[in-house]
Image (tube, rainbow, N blue to C red; front, side, top):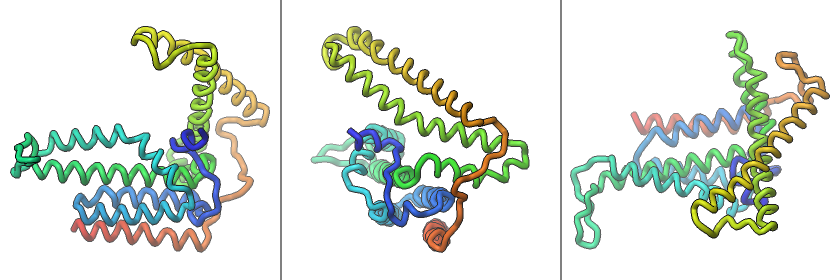
Length: 267
């Protein structure tokens, strides 16, 4: 059950070289690699991106099963993206399957496969970022990178706190929903049987208690923050300030070269 919850933006503790990187390094590398993935739209670039993403997955030191489950969660989105690109892309060569001329083109099939592969690589890249970076570290990295915006009176600290709380509440809401569903199922509520109307009515027995539990957790969190002296806009200190190491400088070179290579391929 833990694996099924962690696949959606969860953090997996570890001591790999990716885990030890500064969150600013990982965010900058993530942006550059994400841009490189969608710059070139050809089969060679997709294969190269797949190898780079696979190497990154191996460097995280996590098991293969969690990546499979993570991609499985997005299978519906990949299927929709493939179908939409195949239908709305034009081409001149008709697609022939078992002697039948389909109302599609070979160019549309190639565009659909390339874009779906790019989208899958982007999803794995996003999971690599969240699996190896805790929500607190990720928020601190965003806050440090956005500090220049303070000159324009933008409340960067408050926004980063909102992002952190939102990221922490996602697994809490998942736990609240699962606990409520198990509690209602133990009382005889059927969620997989009956008519659509009866299933909709049974969902009320889940949504209302789960919403009340989420509001109760939010109230406890607000009381805890108030008890610790949190004040919006007040300066805060850091227990462990972020520092770049030699590993960070070395790690930044790879996504830079990766992005430059894709830009040269496109040119």
